[in-house]
Image 1 (cartoon, rainbow, N blue to C red):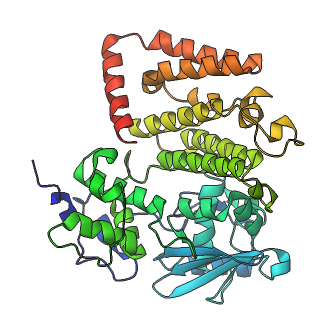
Image 2: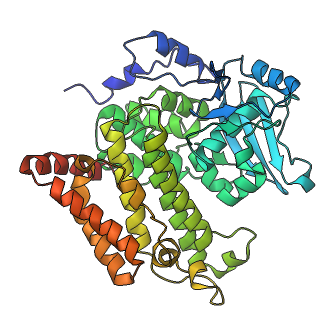
Length: 442
C-alpha cells in the first residue's frame, strides 16, 4: 500500500501560480494522465447562446449592439478569478475578486446607488460581473432547461434585483456555497472550509471522511506557523485553511466524485445550514425581529429550492448522470425529506398562521406540493433501493403527522414499486454495500 501522502505528488506545488488558480487548468487539459478536470470558461455557441463556467446557458437577445460587443470582449479573456470574500454593507453587498489584481463588485438597493452591479475595473458589464453573477445564479437558481436571459448589466433577468436575491438567500449561506468567507466573521477556522479541507485530503488518501485524521479535525486550529515539521498532511491542512488561492487551486485540481465537487452533497450541506438557521431562530426570540429572519418561510424556501435543483439537474443535464451522482441525489433528497418529517413543531410568534410556524405543515402537511417525491421518482430503483427501509420509516412518520391523501398515496406507490423491483438478494447485497460506504462518508 502506498504511503498516505503519495497522492499529493499529483498536485504540483512548483507549478502553482502565486495568486491565481486557473492557469493550471490549461496544463491539466493537455496532460492526459492528470486526474483533474479543466473547468469550462465562457463561450458563445453556434446558436448565439453564451455558456458559462457554471454550465448555465444565457440568451443575449435583450442586449443592444454595444452591450453585446462589451460582453463578447469581456469573455475573450480567460477567467483567472478567486472569490476572496464578501461583506454586507448599508443596503449593499461587496464581493472581493482577485485576478490577481483585486477588484470589488458592489450590488445593492436602488437607494444605495448600486441598484445595478458595479465593478472597480470601470467597465460594464465586465468579465468580473459576468463571472460573479454566473456563480451566484448557479447557487440561487441552478440549472434550467432553457437559457437564462442576460440583462444589460451582466446578470440574468430571472435573478430579479441581485441585492434582494442575495439578501433573501442570506449572504452567509451564499458565501458557503461559493467557498468564500464573510469578511469580519470569527477568526476561528470556518467550519465549511474545515469540512471541505477534510473531504479533499480524505479523498486523496482514499479514507472515509469521518476516519481521516481526527487529531486534526476534531478540534481544528490554523496554528501560529504554517509549517509542521514531520507532518506533511498537517502542513497542507494549515495551508488549505489559511490561503484562499492554495485552497482554490486544490479544489479546482480535484476530480468530481462523491467526496469532492459533488453538487448534491453541497446541496445537502446547504439544507443542514438552513435547518440550523431555523433552529437558531427558534432558540433566540431576538432573531424574530430582524429584517430578513431565518424563519419557517425562509427555511422552507431553501429546502424547496434544493429539491427543485436536484430535480433540474437530473432532467436538464446534457449528459447522463453517473451512478455515484444519482446515488448522491437520492441521499440528499431522502435526507431533506426525513428532516422535514422530523420538524413537525411550531416556532416563532404565536400570532402567525400555522403554515408560517411549522416547517412540516408548510411543505407536506397542508397541501400536496409533491415535495421531494418528484425527485425520488426520477431516480432508478436500482439506485434508490438501499433506502427502502428509510423511506418506509419516513412514510410512517408522515402518516402519523397527517398529510394530503394524494401525497401519501404517491409516496406509498413509490415504496411499493421499489420493493417489487428490489427483490434479488444479490442486488440487496450490492446496494447495501454502497450505502454502508455512503454512510461512512458522513
